[in-house]
Amino acid sequence: MKAVRFHEHGGAEVLRYEDIPTPTPGEGQVLVRHEAVGVNFKDTYERSGAYKVPLPFTTGGEAGGVVEAVGAGVSGLNPGDRVVYQGTGGAYAEYAAVAASKLVPVPEGLETKLAVAALLQGLTAHYLCTSTFPLQAGQTCLVHAGAGGVGLLLTQMAKMRGATVITTVSTAEKEALSRAAGADHVIRYSEVDFLPEVKRITGGKGLPVVFDSVGKDTFDRSLECLAPRGYLVLFGQSSGRVAPVDPQTLNAKGSLFLTRPTLAHYGTDPEELRWRSGELFDWMRAGQLTVRIGLELPLAQAADAHRALEGRQTAGKVVLVP
Ligand code: NDP
View 1: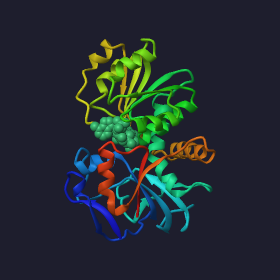
View 2: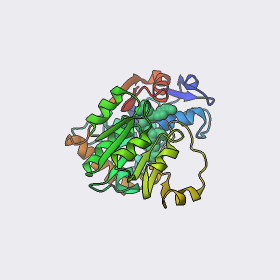
View 3: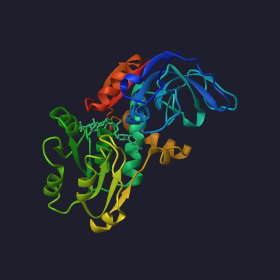
View 4: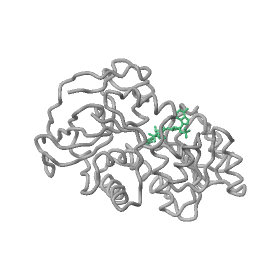
């Protein structure tokens, strides 16, 4: 089968489209024939070496398609079933053998590609605003990179919970998309400093929570945006890794909370995964949640997908089609 691998860490050019053996499903595994593969920022961290992986590595952690074969000890899944998954390696390929416990059935009425596009970023947005910081009606939050894959979904979910949403974006096109997702205030942080804008919007009070995926470039001012006892939810590092923090800073700036959550700790328990993905797919089918595929490319062009994502050229989800 065809797969996208890298044999050394580096820029997008290290991604190679090559032939590797089609896997056979072992005990507890299912062979999935991919119809769509999700591209996530994590894939670029693994490729660059920011996150360590064994080499050579078939990158990608999110895909979906049709069950082709079922390994020993698997029940409740049959060839022909439509499934999606996230949280493994090996997704940038035509097939993957995946632990059955990671598979989420795609419900009737939902296109497999859209389910793939929604899964990882949707589960992330879900846990961030329901569990890491359970947003309540009337609260105001700041979502950085509001037109990104997670950003557009988090904005919609925060609005569903009755919050006022402030986002940051870099361009006029992204501003329009963020507003269409429901953002009440959109700040072009490429042109103006978002900190005084947040102070102005909140009448100087500051925020109970900031969802920050940008990291290095925004972290310090995100802390400044918080009201006393506010939460900084740092969930990514699209601009680079944040420097170490002195805990005393949290005291001095108002008894603040800092957390660095990951989906791996909010979405692997089977019951939790069923709950989160169930709500996600129900909202999509009911038309309450819109998933935007901003870029779709053939699997062979994975390097172009990485360049676009790292170059801030994408809005919404990036999907590869084998
Ligand atoms: P996005 O679609 O949000 O893409 C990243 C966006 O970040 C860009 O489009 C850009 O938006 C903004 N950005 C700001 N500065 C930079 C920079 N220097 N380089 C690149 N982008 C920049 O990606 P995803 O939705 O896939 O992921 C968003 C973040 O969330 C990532 O950091 C990812 O690692 C993290 N994440 C974390 C998870 C977790 O569980 N902890 C799970 C999923 C994602 P703009 O042009 O508007 O500035």
